[in-house]
Image (cartoon, rainbow, N blue to C red; front, side, top):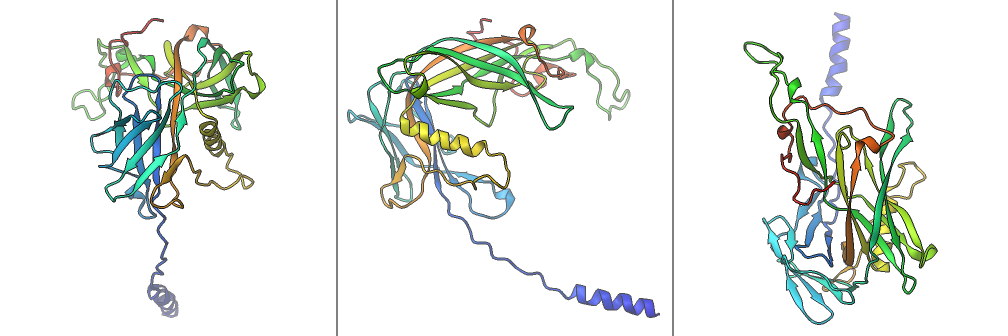
Amino acid sequence: MLKRLIYILLIIPISCIDPYKIDIPQGTQLLTVDGFITTDPGPHLIRLTRSDTYGSVFEGLIRPVTRATVGIRDSEGNVTFLDELANDGVYATPAGFRARVGISYSLQINLQTGKSYTSLPERVESVPQIDSLSYKSIKFNTNDRLTDIIGVQVFAHFTDPSDQANFYYWRNGTSTFVLVANPELYTLPPNHPENPRGPAPKDCCAICFVDDESRIQRFTLASDENFNGLSQRLPVLFIEDNGLRFRQTYRAEIQQMAISSEAHRFLSLIEQQTNLTGSVFDNPPASIRGNIISLDDPDETVLGYFIAGSVDKKNVYIENNKLEFRQTPGIIPDDCLTVSGARLNPPADWNP
């Protein structure tokens, strides 16, 4: 009886505690501009979003800014309006639109709320051509002695002109690889009524082509401060081996862009933030202001940067038999067409 009384006395205080409500102030929804135009024919895409306020994790982190009027004005007074795609905050230039060397461009945005924004002018400078691309298989040690990072480093060979200061920005364009599957290893599902997990080899298909798309855009930066007028071989792209990319042939498209010194500085700050190690000695992340300003409130913080630059592109075909290091091959025990985005035919310009 005494034990039961003690138990009841312990339960009563706990059940009478009221939950404490914490009022978390909502963060400011900042307009974010992401996109660029180049000397390649369009369409070129500009994405408008707003950072989300604090709240439920199910509300998402960003929200598209729709129904805006977006245009690009050049230094000759021409204005090109962009069309919104699928009401998702992505705006596209006409297909034939391309930037021109020697011309400056500004992005102009008018929101449904009546607010107006503009970018500072970006002048397009000429870009040196890529002479060639080469690659090398590399391996990095990690803290886990059983796991190494293996991949391919791509190098751009070019000659920097000596008559101007150059700021380089390398991106990976549309990359495609041969996807190797093993349909002969296919087995029936575990809930099959007659032969669960039983072998059921498929006749097709073992070879497909798939575009290598990543949510994180890989890029490399450089200025010619230390190599003005010299021939260069610079590492511009690292492609990690995930067990599938290099089972046969991988084609990487390298875009070499000439950008302004201001754009180079902005991207350098972005690169510094993304390369933080996560230790207590790192600088806290900060909102990096770009070249977009509000015409209604000069003190309003607008994120992102509108880039205008010239571009040169070249493809490199990476053959698996020329790689010194390889990850354990990934196995797809099914038809390769079951993989999202896979197709049987290669791109029209596929030429290993």
